[in-house]
Picture 1 (tube, rainbow, N blue to C red):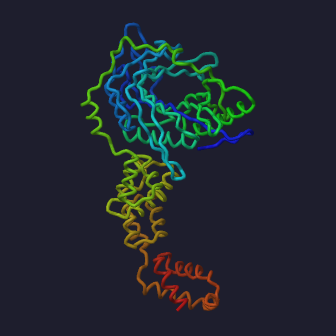
Picture 2: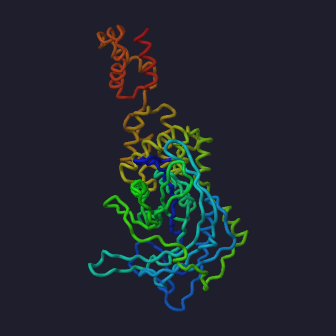
Length: 484
């Protein structure tokens, strides 16, 4: 729990999130129009999307399947009967004057998500509901100084609105929730979670109350925040704003606010609508959606191993720490890559290399696992050479750098550059003897109590062997020589 320190005492955040996740499907929720991102404006608009008179919506079965699949992944109740409603409001990018959504009877009911926090602790956030709805079009105010342009490519695209319980108490928990939800959606293949392209957008509901109070305060909704970092920044700003108003004797107005990324502040957008303002009623053009138990069961059988289960297995099977396991399962591609590297090898060693040198190199080069010049098999080959003591950790890093540059396998680089580690005790002893003989004065100083010189001797022997002496052997043999 994150406490906000006020002049008159401590305050607690109460946070709930509404996430709009674009369904992965080739066509829209009620029409056959394409959903590909980045197309020319208004090039993917059917007569249904444009709300031409007499055009009737027809439900897209793939979108229904994806919603059920997501509900199962969230360990949620699947409602066998759900109803589509009309949510009425007027806006230029909503041609029909209403959005087809779900209100009283959504397709998915209560579920939960387990969060992994940075300090190693965890908490559970309840899911209130998941419902299907159409997206609106996009109003563009930057194309002309005097006119607003409307692009209806997005109008009618299927969204899953996933509503959480107000169970989060800090920006960190909200960030962890979004990361976990995005990971689950990506594992399931139901949403790509790309917040930059708008395929996952978040509304933040936040209220403040005194620490120890159980009654909820008046909430404000911060609309369409498009990155996890901005969600956390918006929460930090808005919590302080509300506390300052409350401590000055003011009242929080229930309203919708926007997050201004340039100024780093929330600002008022409009008073918060209530459900009755939208005049919800069942859409007369759509019958209630009734699911068969066999349909749900068939989807359940195709679910992949999800992040929490995979994390538990990685800890059990590979001896990983909970932290390393969490890092590796955050993306399905990372988890799959690690498993290929770790198969038949030391899991901890494999995890150290994947989460350390490998991820570090990808970040530095701005590459993904898919575009990496080093494959899982190639990294596994390098791990083998460390395990059989052909390479020390230091030499392995040198070989890895060469692998990144050339794309060659580790064994080939070792042979070409002569980087094989020296594990022959006779050869290491010979190198130690030569260094000790050349530095008799320092040997005397060491034996006289100047212990720090040990590192000097290590460095000299490493230098004379081109960094190839086995570090553990060198340490042991040098101690015997100096102390014997």
